[in-house]
Image 1: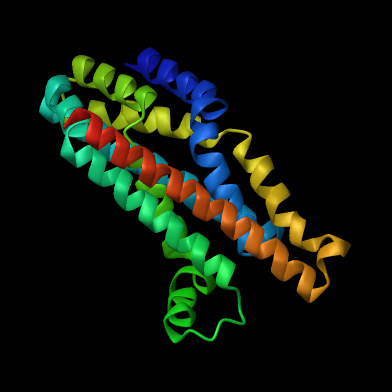
Image 2: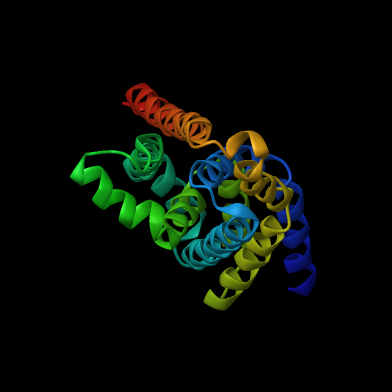
Length: 225
């Protein structure tokens, strides 16, 4: 059990610096840059996001141990999996739009949503951690399928999946997130107008990433149906 947990932790380290970083890195980095976190805020975002995602993995590990490999794979690759992708895409697009709107927006709806998702944004980071933790990517399906085959008790699935999740926390995402938090501190961005354009660009990237997820989800759903 300990050896398997350690091997999954090591796998998390490898995937956290590779496929997992490529999947969630651009989203979290764009969000940090667009919302002007600063180094401390960036560190908080990374920590909340990473811990949330690790606990989501633990919950999925519990499910994998209960419902088995075939049921788990069908859960992800059928309609429910596409719903997860679609909701994630909409949520990321919304964050991008709110970031692009900036502080000077006259829309009351945007101002209210900015207050919920940008200014008091812990819930947004938790939301990103949950949705990205649920993403039906191939490495995660493989890990959870493996856990479902070797786990005979509920707590084993939780421990093994959590070991993998903790491994993904220790990744270059921390350094990249801190770098994104430092960008607004650059002298060139101290000008209010320049920073407003920077925020729009970062928000635009975030929106593009969300739109890409939506398009890929719709095309994938059409292909299988």
